[in-house]
Image 1 (cartoon, rainbow, N blue to C red):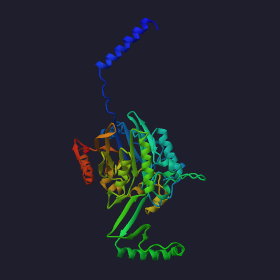
Image 2: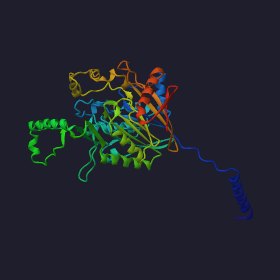
Image 3: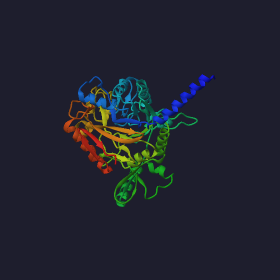
Image 4: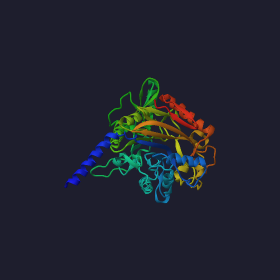
Length: 457
């Protein structure tokens, strides 16, 4: 190096040092993420062509967030290519493959698929659903070819960073549950299950009477023949309609998530926590206590355990109604997001056994007859919902907005179930309902210009 080059480099170094003294380093702006969520999506007619302002406002709610989650509660497949599963009268839901395109139109970035419909059309229907979500670029979690795949976290990469999810279900037919692989066998395809350990507590007199009824049934069915070859059931144990029962004080139904299932879900959340900026835990849970708006007692401790494991939000869907909101350790728990797209009554290929289960001619070609046998259309609570938008800064919740959604109660079947931002009196009605259901959790919310703002402390 000659003398001229040495002096030039020395001068550059001095300039850099001087600049560092004159211009102090500034703190980086907080990492900001907006996250939105919607409840049950049951789509079977195209709505992406609509252009009315309130519909487009609902679309913008989702598209305007950095990331939006939804519950995909139907099979996405060609009905002629799959076979209906035997469900004992629980309705089947299916949409053509373009249903996935409709979800993508709304800006739904990732979905949960663990619910009581994902295997409505068997393994073929489930795999077709996952393939169609892949086709439109919507990642998912909650179901797969075996338990390991169903339980694994899912991820979506957004402009604001990577967001993970763990999805499961407590409401499902028994054969929907995925099973683990074995060295000699493949696992069973299905969903990520959360089984409930439940027990009916009865006063002793009622317990004794029901136990006698149980014994009569067992004798009529020759079940006592097998019982005589097994360990004797203790006097203070029994079953009624398949539910374990025992004597207690008063009448109650205890309920808790199965410890092994809880451990599997929380372990997946911890794994996702290591790989994502934000983590969402979600469940499909119909279970209620006394009324649909009140969750089963298992759900609160389950949700809190998910937050403790590292989830930044907990989302529940399933019973098709609004439930309350809890703020736990600064993180939101939504006990039910209700419906977002609820078009269960139109253009749905319906299995013959579904018609028969509701007293209809199994050969009828009119699927609207089936819809009229279900009471959803008669009650407004199934046609009102909300979209939460949560803002995080450096992983901390700094704002939660609640946007009311109307699904068209009282409209004709062919129009009902399409989401629109609620306005005026209906908007206030929905927000006041959310606020009322949230009070038992100590959550308060103020209403400003048709939007709810949840207090964080």
